[in-house]
Image (cartoon, rainbow, N blue to C red; front, side):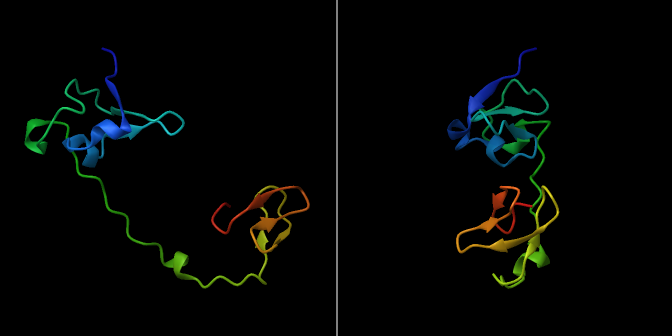
Length: 103
């Protein structure tokens, strides 16, 4: 059975939009049902889909509430050296550049 894929903009109005089994291909804006449901993108009520599962709502991470201090270095994910904020992003001697959450 072929996987029925649709463009992510076509999910609006269908219950697949809020289903945990809806899988989006990150580098290609196509989505498909993880259970290969033939009605993917056409179902209007979760009662009409035996595979439906609500997405889990992630709680905010307490670590994200840390105050940003540009004077405090972070560890470079490539070479492990201390990396300092240059005003726009972190920049390392090994040529890695990134933001606080790019580790």
